[in-house]
Length: 288
Image: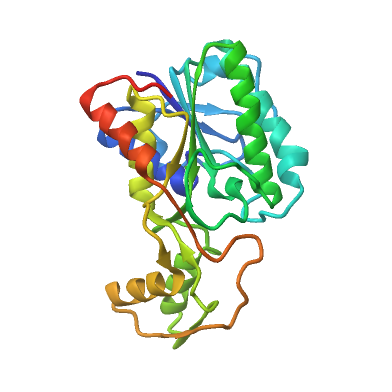
């Protein structure tokens, strides 16, 4: 099966590539013309162009894939930037619709839990989406655009709503990497919020495995949460990281305010994801 990946050099993308390689699949990876090619990609088929200015033969350059795992999105982690719907949204739709019209049969796109907005509690895919920041709104709008397009052009759309991922290779501004960096600098304390907010955290390796399973399998779940399904307080998670790695530093709780763009307690339902992965394991065909 021919598979292509955008955003392959990013945090999640590198893990998706590694998962595919472990399964004996060499994906075609899309790299921006000015970007340095990661050493681990040297033996892989490459396509070099910017999705903001895709060539007419973009589908061909990507190896005429049966599946595209689309992870690329610029402007992060500034979730409040108007760039997300003023610039990124039309770029994304133009690129993906061009591939769909060229013959792409299955599109797997990374969405976000921010599509749910300020809703608290366990979030289910059938919940109404009410995004309250520009990033969540743009992702929500792209999903609806692609759903309308899929009614006109025959292709399958899997919309994978990512919750909170963590692991080595994250952006320096992420909580895990800030904590790791503080330890590396020999700091005795780590400033953070009160840590009482409940979130849904998933190791990046497991998220990558789920995306690849959805891309390769016959199940077509439509919109699906990529999450652990287990709420955990940020404080408890950080304390677990400290204990697991035998780090010697004290948490300075309450040094920062809680973010105003997310509710205090929310996590994802994993039921639909679990059912899709089970259907793939059995070789059944799912009905969205």
